[in-house]
Structures are given as C-alpha cells and as structure tokens.
Length: 375
Image (cartoon, rainbow, N blue to C red):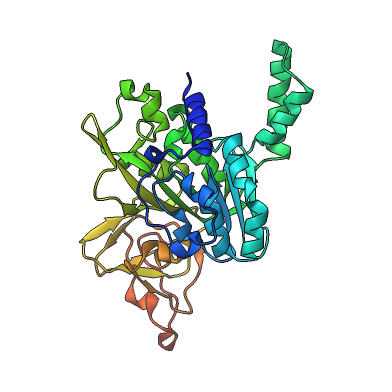
C-alpha cells in the first residue's frame, strides 16, 4: 500500500467515526468554536491552532482542511472582506466540510468559505476537474496516459486551482507530515508560489528531534498517524528558508513530546514565515539597532546585526525587521531626509554612520558610507 493510499483510507475512516489518536491536545479559541457543529469539531484532527494568525480581510488557504473546523474558525476572523479556501484530496472529508457550509454561512453572515479538491503538493491541479475529465475520457491505453498528462499541464497553466501570488495567509494543521518525502520540497515550493509577496505562513505540524529511520517510514500506521513522515526539527525550518521564505521561525514549540517512538521525540510546533516582496532593494539610508541580549545575530542571507550598533539595511529589509515578524528585536532608525537613494549593494556587516541617520533638523550634504553600500 502506498503512503497516499494509507493516508486516504485512514482519513476517510476519520470522516465517518472519530479517531482520537490522530490529534494532539490543543487549546482552541472557545468563542470561535461556539457556533461550529459538534461533528466538525469531533472529526477534526490537528496539533495546533493556525487560526490565531488570521487577520481581518485576509484571503486564507488551509492546506488539508479536513472537516473544515479551522476554515470556519478563520472565516469568523477574516470578516466580510476576507475569504477562506480549504483544500483537501479526500472526498469524505470534503463532504463533511461542505455538509454544514450553508448553515455556517448563515451564522457567520456571508458565504466566505470554499472547499476545493486538490493535493497540497500540487495546488495548481483541480482534482474535481480531473475527475470530470476522466469520466468523459477514460484511460484505455498508453496514448491516453500521454494525452492526460498534456491535459493536466494545460489545466495547471490555464486554470490553476490556486493562482500564483493570490493568498495572504497559508495555514495548515498537522498535514505536511502526511505528504510523501519525495514531494515535500515540491509542497513547500507550492506554498511559496501561491503566497502573495509580503504574505504569511503559519503551519502547525509535528517534528522529530532525530531523523526518522527508513523502517519506521515504511510503517503505514505510523505514517498515517502523523509520526514517521515528520520532518526533523532543523530540516523543517531549512526547507522554508530554501524555498525563499524569510523570517522563518518556530512561534510555538511543545515543551513535552506528543509521542516517543524508538526513543525519537515527536512534538507539536507552529512555524511562521513571510514571502519577501519582489521589488528591488534600495539604499535610502535606513538603519537598525539590534537590541540584544546576544552580542550578534545573523539573518538567512548572512547579514550580521551587532548589539547596540547602527547597522545599514535596505529599505526592504528595514520594513521586514521593524515589522511584527521580528517582534521587538530591532530599533528602526529613519534616514536623514537628504540621503541620496541608490540600489542596495552593501556588504554583510556594513555599519551606518550617525550622520546618515540624523533628523531633518541636521541637514547637510549627502554622506555615503565607504564600504560600498552606495557610490
């Protein structure tokens, strides 16, 4: 039995009868749960609460939406101007989620939730459209297979299930570990593709403290039970960095493991990240001061920030480091009004002169730092 088949069958069972061993204890927002049907709550399987990261007006994509619980929670937070899309490959789970869609729209005040059929590692291919195509064009020969591949590629390009750069927030609740190892890199690249520049990611999942051995990965019960498909804790973060995300961090980390199998600890975590904006970075004279307590820290591009020292940063990095993604770690310093703007090309570790960050009451001729940032 393949990984996909094992997962599909176990979660089809989970849509019919509650599977208590498929979820970790999670402290969900009781107010958001109050209007949800009990069946949706009982048949939801997760290890965290990514709905906490939803903002008003967001377009939210929930990967592996299952019973629809997180989608309906998020729908209460996005408001009438927002939208929530749940994607799942399992017809039984989609049926359960859609069963209460009209009632939930009435309770929430509008129909702002949609459930679509797809694989989270291939968010461009609409599986409902594929089912309809196969019903009209059944496979009888190798030529039919080739024709199907051509049709699929055309669909991904012309009618993608989830369009490029269309999502403000991608969330998921204990689903990434269910994807085959060979597809995990593709999965995270798909998350990057659909997220808007400046958009966010909040993924609750299971990680392991050690790499999971091959014999455990072959165990279908362990895999479908969110155990043996877990990424190692460092590898999980690095996968998002390698895909192009920034501000990648563990926002939540369970102090106690959910399960220990063969002396490997498996615990619930929530990872957050941001897709960087696409505009070219400019040097406009911005600086940041790292507050401490460490003597220095580095970002994923190798730029160092020394405690208490004004570090030169691009306008793009300034916006990121002074946003909520980095909390209160940095002090942002605006440039002098007469700073001469130029493309960013500073070397890692470049400092910013105090003259360049004086206020408008200290106007003087533009000063360029000598380490190659400008001029």
